[in-house]
Structure formats: structure tokens, C-alpha cells
Amino acid sequence: MTGGASAHDASAHDPGAHEELQQYAEKLAAVFIAAGFPRMAARVLLTVMLSTDAALTAAELQERLGVSAAAVSGAIKYLETLGMVRRRAHRGSRKERYELPEQAWYTATLRQPPFYAEIAGMLPEGITTARRADASDTVARLTEMQQFFEFLRVRLPQLYEEWAAQRGDR
Image 1 (cartoon, rainbow, N blue to C red):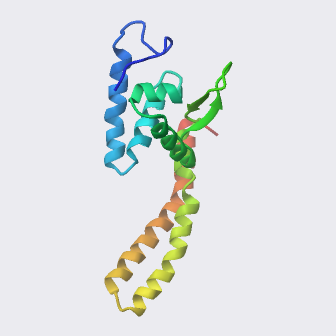
Image 2 (cartoon, rainbow, N blue to C red; image 1 turned 180 degrees about the vertical axis):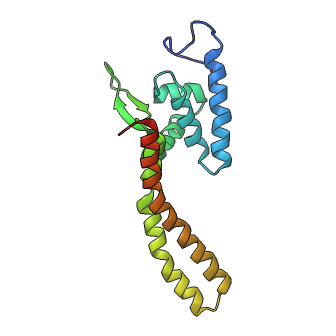
Image 3 (cartoon, rainbow, N blue to C red; image 1 turned 90 degrees about the vertical axis):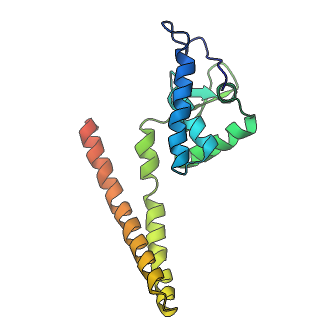
């Protein structure tokens, strides 16, 4: 990890606060990585999230993470597909800043129901095939998987509504 905070990002009260915050970003990213999130994407996401204005350039990400431009680019592309990061033109420059969209966590989560529906819709074919193969354990696993993805497809939009109501977004 390297230091390199921009002037507006360093704490006026504690010069070491930026480095501590980056260390915290790395610890939080480790939890995401342990849960199966791609390593570099987790590090980039948490570094952007914990930056002062939730937006950094590729050069700032490279400096803070001590990684190559290619590593940052690949992570950004992945995070963009999830809807967790977006590109914005940097004022007065040709550089882009990568920022968290508003409500990034549940926006990214809610983008997945079509995936869940597609998976749930594909599973009856596998269940039928497993039955023909007389593979009862496989049938049970596929049936449970189908039920789980169908549950997610139905419940995630409802959970979003509950979250929005709790936050007063209506």
C-alpha cells in the first residue's frame, strides 16, 4: 500500500488518517474476498467507497493500491457490470473518475433478479434429466437450488421496498 492522498482527502486533524482509512479499506476488502468477491475488484470498490467524495481516478487508485493500470481497469470493468461503480468525466481534464452510484449496494443487488429468474427457469430441465438418470440426490440439490433462486427473485424487490420505506425514500 502506498500513501499519496490528494490534498482534499487528507485529514487536517490527523495526517495519518488517510493511511489508516486505506488500511481499513484493505481489511474490509479481505472480507469481500473471503466471501468470493474478486480480489482486485474488492480492493478498488472499498478504496473508492472510503475516499472522501466516493470518486477516484485510475491514477489515484493505482497509487493507493500499488497496482498496475491494467489491474485497475479490469476491476473497474467488473464493478461496472455489477452497477457498483460508474465512470464520470473529471472536470477540466480528459481523465475519468470512478465513483459509486447513489444507493450502490442495493442497486447492484437488485440488478440480479433477472439472473435469479433465468437460473430458476433453467433448473427444471436439469431436474428432469437427473430423474431420467435416476440420480435422486442430484434431483434434490437441483430442486433446492431452484426454490432458492425463485425465492431470491421474488423477495429481493420486496426487501428493496422495505429498505426504501425504512430510509424514507418514498
